[in-house]
Picture: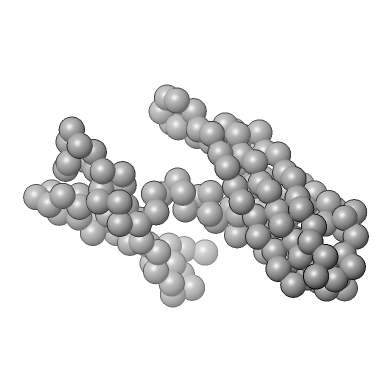
Length: 149
């Protein structure tokens, strides 16, 4: 796996902290810093997600992928799955994640709650590389809603 991240800014512009990531799979992801009113050259223009937001989003994608795949392999009729991540970060550098809560919403036909609970646990204990890495610094908690369709 590889990724090239390139600075798109220019020291003389207001968008000094924009970046584009080109992934090994051929996709592009934009990132930008928060505006800094006191030192505009050190901030971004709020044109894209912050780099740490992309870490959180990637973790959500990783675990949601696992949950859907585990449920489908169990022959459950999954129709929708989403996960909302909320987090807290350390106040001082490095501002690592210290708490992450993941709330899943799974919709489908006749899916037992125990199957969703098991899928989430398997993701966080065995399969989701991103959440397992983040668990080194963050307390990760989960919850879910199950919607019958």
